[in-house]
Image 1 (cartoon, rainbow, N blue to C red):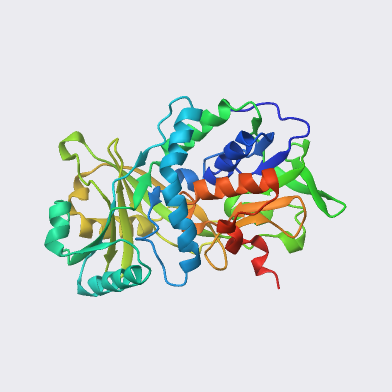
Image 2: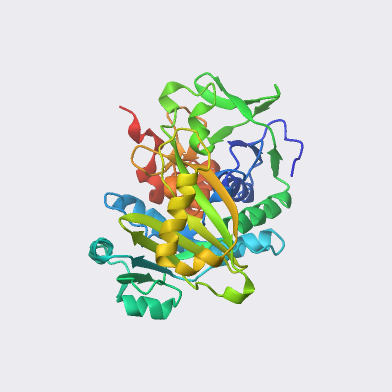
Length: 384
């Protein structure tokens, strides 16, 4: 979708991943005119992702402040996709309340899961411990040697590609919104305030507010004053997609996350017969090469959990870049430069945090008020 951008929109958004697209949609619904700039919206990490909505099973030590926002965004998803389905004219965003099963491959991995379960219980999170046989009864395709598992009924999934398609359909029906498929080359600043952007082709768009939501590239836009540069970095992840022939359906009914010889793997079954395997975590700068080692490790660990995957066709290999921040938490809200806001740094939780981030950004852009839920993720928290 490409439309002629308004000469002076209320908001320009740099970056068209899930967070940028959803922010544009929610902001336009608040009555503001919005122009989103991206040469290939929805083409990077948002397209490659597995779409897990797993705040409880993906809990990490030291990330307790982020947990509350993750849980709030997960609770928001049912209403969010209902609104999106209506706004898009009936497009299915691919949301599934299927639950998540985390399993352990060997005794050491079982100890890791037991420790996670104790951590979850200390935070009053709902997770049920299962024996290996109980886990296999729930998912018969699991390997016979599985040593135990954690069932989290409240951790779900969304098909991120269907979600992107639904957002594009909703945006196409929104008269206050335009998408410009051109790269932003530079932020313009006048009198100490962000005033718009300069495009790669020389075009200029003036705006009352600018949102920087370009993932791990958010710090590479020229013209951003040093005090407002978001400290984000690329974290490479390799991911595979397999097809599940009808004869094997349903291979899995839950999202399966596993600890395999201390490595972490996941298998996400789609309703339409796709199985997503991932994902590696590599600090490789901006490299997006799919490597033989990455594919081997993903297949090796997934096969250890579900041996039957060796019969499935491998239909896609891909590598994408997550936007990481120094504390692995997002940057959401105003920067040190008036008129410039950011929504980036979501790292592993970009799909999960899309509703909460979009709602918060729309509120800030429309009213100037920062919701309490995102105040801990103020972009200015890294300034010395």
